[in-house]
Length: 383
Image (tube, rainbow, N blue to C red):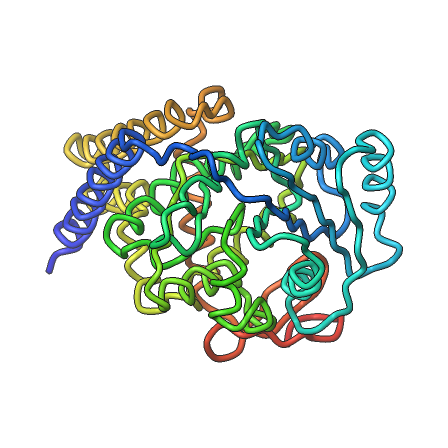
């Protein structure tokens, strides 16, 4: 097959993908969501933390002003008794004396520190509805009501949430926020529509203790890289539904560096690669901008080739604006013109994450083993 025809075929397939993604976005945000009933349960919010995140005190505080009709508690967990987050939690305990706020030091149990903490927090939690949320997330007062409402349906085993980037203070942080809006979020909605939502997203998850015990507790996730994916897949395997809430949490990005962003996005991509290895190569069809540039280059940047590039960019911007409008994403609205560069970086990360068996996570290095399991490596250069 001639190169121009090959690249044009791949580009056209990518257009089909983004048209489907745009339809999935429109369909999802038009759907009515479950309304909270009168019998919402008391909740234990489990928050594993490690090191200081951008605006961490405000992020944590947003969970303490919930408009929720029942009791709820906020449990923070660390593995290091000297973790600087403990000072922030102490301030919160003083500022919100009527709230049940606890800070617990969890013993390391496996390669995944986050899951080690969750194991300990779940054991200490007072209530049987558990809400897990990452440390860099900030929420609005209606968060608990909206993520717990779907659990009133007995067929729902887990509720997971989308998220968007916010307060991006550096250029790299803006690029990260663009990835979340223009690539990750629409892809998650395509997965929801065509993969029966048999997975969970890491930002926020809610489930009953009954379902957690049914899959073997957080302990079964201790040595996995993609613990959120595993959690959702295992709940779905019990016959319960994984429900994607229309509530969008906010990841406060702050001032990230390129090195931090690169390590984080490589880890995200490798999470997908090890979780769904047969589908990872198909992600090539989401890379419409680089594919269109290859098409134009193979056509020697003729008028027809440049038209292919223009069509690809128009379609990408259309889906990005559609997501930004529905999620109130101000970062994309102020930096939409960087999308072509963002797409090129995404393609480089896709290639880089497709090879190699190591991953970096919060200053530690791991080897990836069969099935996405982790093995901690000693400090030093990759082998």
